[in-house]
Image (tube, rainbow, N blue to C red; front, side, top):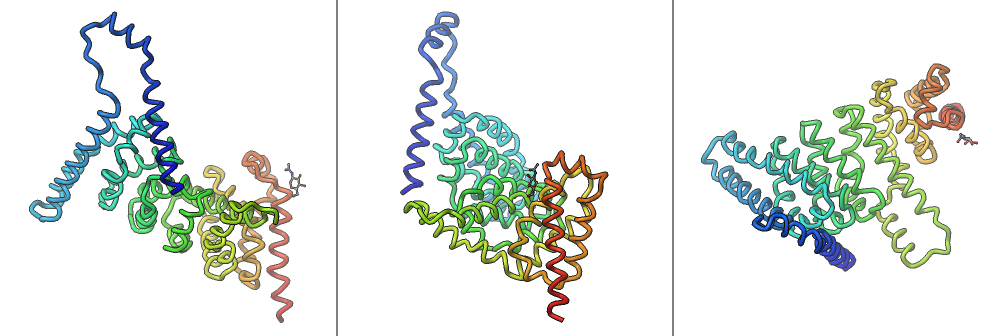
Length: 353
Ligand SMILES: *[C@@H]1O[C@H](CO)[C@@H](O)[C@H](O)[C@H]1NC(C)=O
């Protein structure tokens, strides 16, 4: 119901905005100046035509692929035809009015949702970029309209597409879609949990890892904040907390699977840290965020202690001071967190003995 109302509101907004585009003055002026100029095709018609065109090329290609009449690269030639049109469409929907019109014409269903399954990067790339632009330009409407199972497809691309750029596009979309969106988060956790994320780390480059860690930190902080809401909550608050409970992220955070997976991320990422890629920023945030949850699991792990010691040495290195401050790292605070972490990790080894 909520989604439906959002949909109505957004469509209405689209029409209103559209109506305000041509003020009467402009119409009169141009009519006087250029009496024979034909009316330009309205944007909604252009968008409808573009979508229909893409739809029919995609249908032809899919039919060829199904029937296996032509070799794959012949089918791909059809997909290549779509690329230029998609590039035009991407430019168009950067305008908010056009993005609403795209949604009104059910563009996601008609050209994105099914075609994003096709494992052909030349086509998949622009489809993902189109979706990303829609999420950037009209996030609320896009979230309200998009089939939730698009998340499954994005995760599948993130896990299984060998093309790093496709993984990065999929992650960029999740980066906009998941925060403050428990419904979408539930879907991710039910489907795959966090496993795909740390399994992929060794295959990603540092800029993508930064985004991944940043997303993880954002969502983790969101869950911590929601759980800390004081007792005087409204019904809406309590419904929201209920949803967050269902995700159970904080419960999972303390499990060996997650903590050891995160250690893998740290180990992998640490070997990439340079002053050029700034990946140290999200790494430090994550160390801080997981400390209350992963201490128990990581206790006695020499590898973990060594890694945190190496990170501590880095943070304390006078040569890095200015660099870290430029990244908004609170060095004093980070030092305390790491020293604490290391002490407690070691402490229990002796304790157990
Ligand atoms: C850094 O963190 C410490 C301890 O958490 C805090 O007291 C201090 O105000 C912080 N400094 C800045 C510049 O935020």
